[in-house]
Amino acid sequence: MCKALAEDAALPADKSRLQARAFASGLNDLTAFLRIAGQTEGLKLVQDALCKALAEDAALPADKSRVQARAFATPLCDLATFLRFAGQTEGLKPVRDAL
Image 1 (cartoon, rainbow, N blue to C red):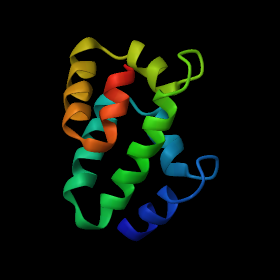
Image 2: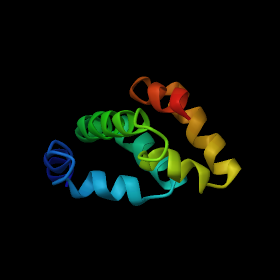
Image 3: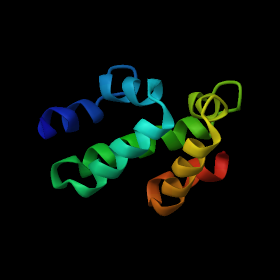
Image 4: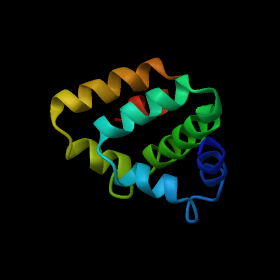
């Protein structure tokens, strides 16, 4: 399973089912998945790929960014949890800064 997820995460954004799922997920669910991925040897590449995709998206103008739109639709307690996690995760610091 880890190998299949890593292979999918390495695909271009328009072909990756995992990236599409990440952008469709709530920030609380995304935080939980990224936390587990970062702690699981076979999923660290998955976490890196998703963090990169999220950072690229967060850098887009507000009207084009899926992450920014998701942040405004997220309950504040879940948003706070995501922002705390993003601040502690090197690849997500640009996301936290953009939000």
